[in-house]
Length: 291
Image 1 (cartoon, rainbow, N blue to C red):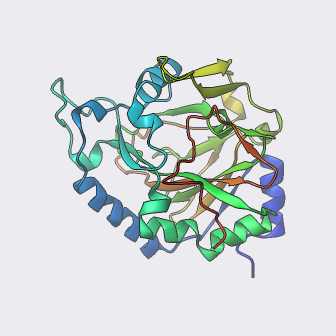
Image 2: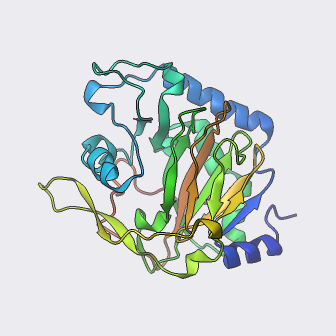
Image 3: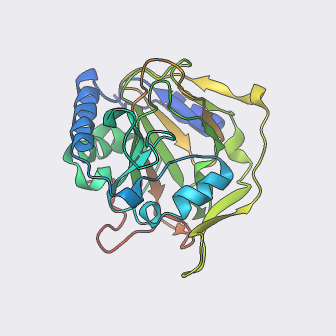
């Protein structure tokens, strides 16, 4: 039996997202979290790389874009921190394990446990069910959503950052490694918003200019009442259309909300924009999903 039903496909096409239970077992979730704890324990963070990650427009440009560390992270495993976790000297003021916003963007390429999940028969089955002919993996991230300090992610569309011609070729695969609830910062969506195109893009600026990225177009404002919560149980997955508007609130609870997420692109008859921050490299061309 297919992991994804025809009804699920219909829901994804109509709403721009769908929640599916049981992609991973509880044990598989724990193994991914344990492996990440080991990676974090061993991380060596250069002083200049203590980059705070934020989704507010100006800070986004200042911190992510300005930092070469971010723009060259597509084929590496790198560390991005929450606000306020370092003192003036760049030393941790919270436990190391509690300091991170995310780790990205090539876990799928260099970490065997993450690679196995990314290319699992269920994930390949989802892509086939959706009719993808030659899907490739663009990037992957472990998102921590730390208790008490896990920051808000403002409303956005993934295609703002991962732009293709034509649009509609990118899908996020968002796997809950712990229960994602309204209390600990689950995702919220505007159903059907994937049909309205995108209003802005983050692009690389010309070589030798600063900052390294900029936004073109305008930031849209959205009616709060249109957002629908999408809680998901541990081991469940949300498939996210590249143009659907989504956000998540701060995590004010005492529980973390660990997630492993990656993006897939249908490569057949698709042009990946050379202006995107993320670019394939000689070391890591975008790997095919189907093995």
